[in-house]
Length: 388
Ligand code: XIL
Image (cartoon, rainbow, N blue to C red):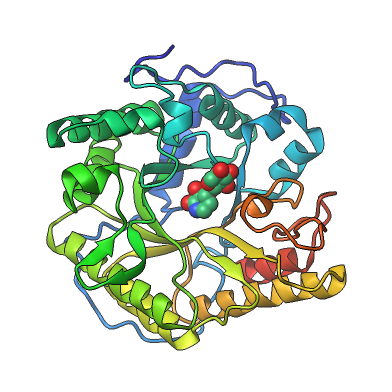
């Protein structure tokens, strides 16, 4: 068992390093610090930034330095440990990775007394060995909480657990993880007046204060970290999605007015080919977010294909086209600081857990197929990040 505050001890051996060359912790920290200094993750503090109107324009995919937008993917520690082709695909395609579950509460806090970082450390070590950056995911979420957290019985206890948890994990990877999804999915599925925040163990005991508490704890544990609020179902046409955009904008404004530290909004972008992208609604929302001084990241892009035709070529084209429409709408307003997909290859995707195809065919939501060959979705992402 590891205890809170224990420093991350990098072993010189990685269980699944592709590159054999080991870097010392000092080297790694230096690299991380200079990446932060170069603004790779574009950290602009929200509080204190004056709002200005954002002209709509076709954003250029390259930065002033000519660098393509960094690309990354969610990874699984077990697959990294057991699948050499997967490791190779991650190393050759990703500038950064994010653990799909290994930094969530159930993995890190299986019981109240236990902090377990083996799998999270394995991912961080793999990244370090291969010169890849890591995003952290996630600290304050309603979902997937371990059963023991139901026993939290008071405001003071909830605040203590939340803050200690955040200090332990953000502190452990201080200088190593430059960007954290601090708050995940705070908005109700269909927010209504007076019922905007999604109920959780945190809203139960802390009300809306949980957002500020979490953001401050993360900022205090690593002042250089990019603090991200991450949300889904923001981009589509229809009253539920318009209500979600309104609620999210209002929440971001409240956080700014309360002086909470926040640097970026993460658009998860779990897209559906049969849902229309609301270009105008999304663009006006993004302009408002940008005018608040917040950066935009695309954090979990994939295209859910369970209702698409079985024909693979036709399906892949629809998946790529859907992502293209979304990226076009975003890029016309803002150049995202990063694009991540929720998985790299169709071999490892969360989609069938929730959206299995009725015809029994495997889902194809990601940029590489199950044999790690690039699909049309890969080309679309490349085009936008390199700005064809
Ligand atoms: C999902 C993982 O992919 C699954 O493996 C896990 O069982 C449940 O969570 N939005 C998020 C992610 O922010 O954390 C979710 O990840 C997918 C939806």
